[in-house]
Length: 174
Image 1: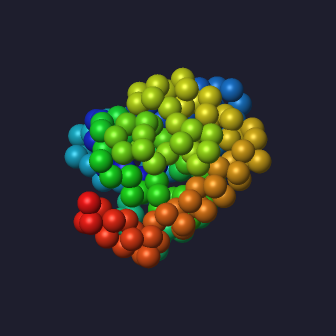
Image 2 (image 1 turned 90 degrees about the vertical axis):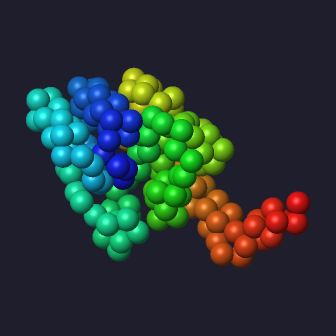
Image 3 (image 1 turned 135 degrees about the vertical axis):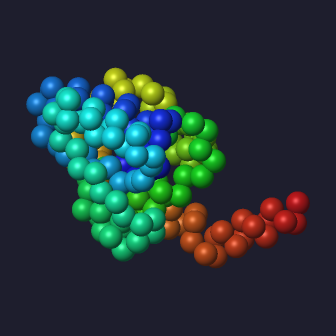
């Protein structure tokens, strides 16, 4: 997860899903990358400690080499925002890096992320469905690889410089 660490980021939803995933015997680690108000970060860290969850907090600059390396080293990227986030840059960056994406349908994600095609999608705040989707990609490496390949192919084709310039020109002509 790479998101601002605020109340509506969906981090607690991810932690509750992780709790279910671990209870079902999966051995995973969730890496959380982001910054936020100290009281909210402290609350999140307390939740992790209280529930003995395998979570690692990292603080990497957006669009840094270290962040892209984190994407490449991870198996799945989670987008858990629970507000109508108008920008889905980070999931697209994860897709471009070759990661499978599990994401909420909130905000612009509903337009770009298609369940079972280029990502797995769940409703904001629905930790039970998120847990099932996490277990699906853990238990089915072929699914994870198929989603990662489809997402990467789509991002490279639709969001390269030429394609974006063409989209802007088409929009301005209208």
